[in-house]
Length: 121
Image (cartoon, rainbow, N blue to C red; front, side, top):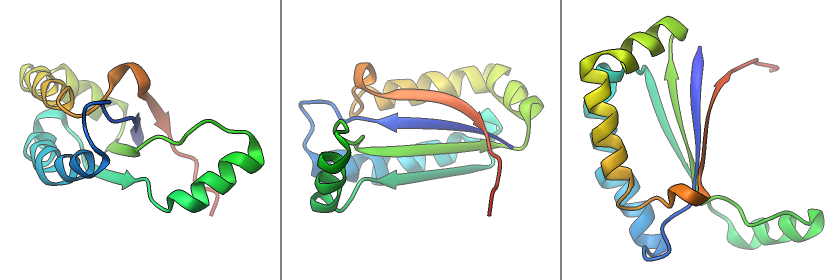
């Protein structure tokens, strides 16, 4: 499978509470409604939690602040990805997603990349 990994940082003008609420309650249903247009087979949100433990791990390793969360989107294979994202419906769906993401995501501080999983256990 091919997987998109999207490491998110919220916009400065959006509170953490509003960010997580909007992402889960507003954006997720939009993604679900557009999944077939982009050919995606799975969508998962991972919301950052346990701030005290995160802070301890950051300090012990000298790391930067964590992302506010991670989105993962799966396609069966490269052909499914190319077909879904390259179709007129897929292109329109991507435009809708980007427009909605701009309401709560700081694009300049976020990262997005495609991966191929290698299951170890």
